[in-house]
Length: 283
DNA sequence: ATGGGGGCCTGCCGGC
DNA sequence: TGCCGGCAGGCCCCCA
Image (cartoon, rainbow, N blue to C red; front, side):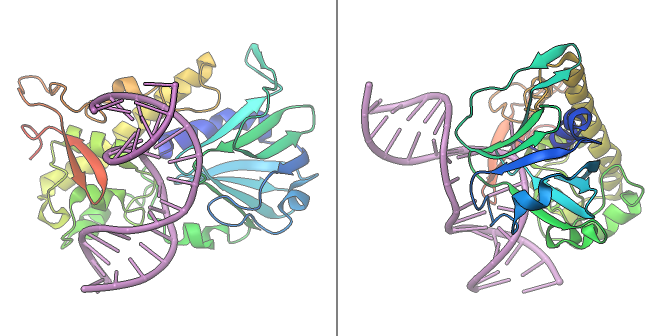
């Protein structure tokens, strides 16, 4: 599910329940996700107040009053389900426990946050808040797409000379952090760039177009997530709200939406991942 | 250094 | 109905 917009939506959904609140009890139902969970995780969470809930790329970072930070990655299928809390005018009752409820945070006041992850590609870790950015999973990440460090000269420099397709380059979290398969496909469609084009072969105009379009696509997806949060149809941040806006992703065989283009959305496998694109208007 | 492919897991969907 | 192959939004690791 989760690329940057989904993780940001989850963060915003969790904020009212988590930030400033105390973890009364942490329930850890298995020793590992993708990797072993940190030593004594339940003990290190119990009684701790969450002082801030941040996001870096696709990672959630919950700062605790113990001086540690809880890192959470949702992998492919991870979800954060909120229950036992008032969200707007709706109260979400506790559901029956589900298969793959791996970690449950029982908050003071009765709210619960349940981390459910069927495929278990997700991860959690605890580390000192000071220097959290040096965590092995975070240290090599490129700039945030909305940050000042992500700009046209930077991107041009990172793409120059690269013999990898632009599709792969934009999925490379060291170049820009937070994009996944969906939003790379959507961005390249809007930029009218073929996913097969080698990154180093892009002209200055193409590179020029990419920075604002990446931001535009991500901002629209966050806004769509935010609007469904306001409606409380998607308090858990599940995908679905933006999917109706996809112009190419998962739309193989559909007519291209570009006005005047008679092309058909095509699926091409690149390094094992599906690229959806219009061969007529993406060059 | 760089680029490509395998593998980790489970669930779902379509075809037979 | 059941079985099987293919597919899934991520990312680390190994190999050439």
